[in-house]
Image (cartoon, rainbow, N blue to C red; front, side):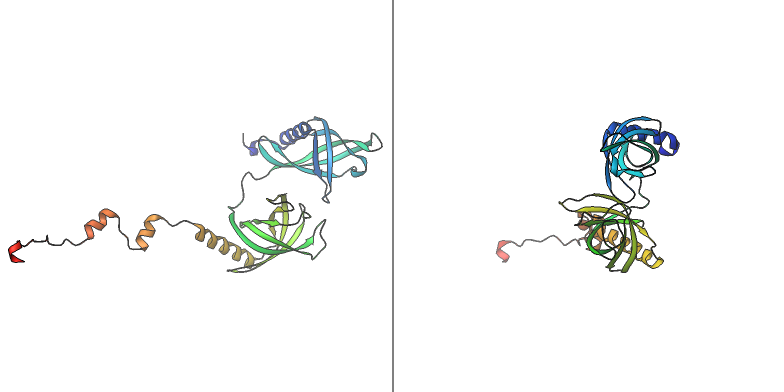
Length: 255
């Protein structure tokens, strides 16, 4: 059954059951803090759980990524009640309010590359405004790009400004960080970003940039290479070679 055929209520219930199966899971607050939630049980889309008492409050939204039916989902739950259960922990009632599949199908195909760039913090939880970050663009599409940064401070929902010059022109636009995952090296992160407020000029530069990179990366077809080098197949070469008259051997006495 496809996701379009599954009701939101059913998806929320499935997500709640997955959270309970996790038993203990790190969830992110609206401002980027991480809270470890101990899940206990669920009834449809409502969960019973506990958390550090000083880190939660009624009305707070908590988000995480979990696998639902073998598909990664971004799940958000709202805290409906908080009741102190001890000096350090509180009992919670949460309700799943969002569960959306992630990475099922990209809006546009991404092109892999390696381009140094500079991004500047605009509205970030852990980074001061206007602080520059060195980055490497590792893939790009018309809807967004991936940045590799040697910095662990960027978080989901941060806003950044990208400035990078490519052959087609200068790209200057805002980005929203949609996902964060560890990079290949310690201290590195890969940021999945979407374009925000991208001008028509910047959008045209991005499209032409992607087209050029794809054309450069596309392997040449063997037939085209033969044609370009004016090389005929072996059988055609034999046909095209002019026939020379057979050599006539002279008797020894005529030499």
